[in-house]
Length: 374
Image: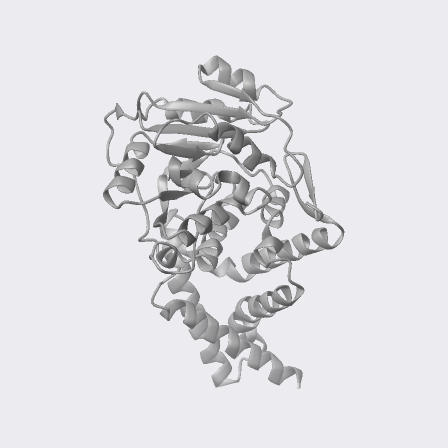
């Protein structure tokens, strides 16, 4: 009975991998991307940059230095979200407008409350929402603005290139982007009429009047996956959005060890599943079949021809879907061999997120704990 169950799960896993390969929206593709196309400093009077920053003293100067290369008259507002380091001093020394954020009201996440306070000062047609750890390549803001205007987009978001300096980052961060694209296929997110909406909160250019029309950040004040929630609000209002990969936006926040990546994923993994035990069970069954049984079952049944063919087909599909993201981030094709381990780690991170929720912790980030009652 156990043997039949293992083989059945292997067949299911192989079927699911080939579904990913063959679906027309190709969630594993990397064609949805945007890079800087202009090194010239052009006027950017129409944009205000909002940077919510909490304890980012080590990172924010690099972010601001990169913004200085973007263009002329770019307005920048840093909202100091009650930092207990030198974040505010670093921003003031750089010469930008610094708002001293107040404590978030009940039901608000800290980042969204900081952005809400910053938005009250914006008087430009466009607002660039930028995380304090994002370095922008020269000209990318002009490129974002050009794309928004030429395609009449209300919202343009870039998935910033993660830090890939350390072994654990090179192992897990390309997979993090890969899984995100499976959950939120960019091609569907960019298609008018599709119900899929996606964004990467590190770099978002949005029309200011659109933000205010949808109720600004108050309409999503308690959202932990605030970027995708914002994209969903805008898209459901009938306005076009776009998301893509980019090397021209890079995160300089490093992850020194497994624990930091683990906590980053666990912060919202169970939220992705809408806090549903049923969806958690389904997700576990799917990932076990795809990452354990489908690629590895032939190791235990080496004399079974059908099982061997199933294993070979699984590895072919895994190579097809994972290779594009590895190439995009210039990683070795051999990293495909680690996918069963990587998938297991992300599944365990999801269970960690669920356990934390069940003990009363909705999320914890930057020394703030968000309880379930929030």
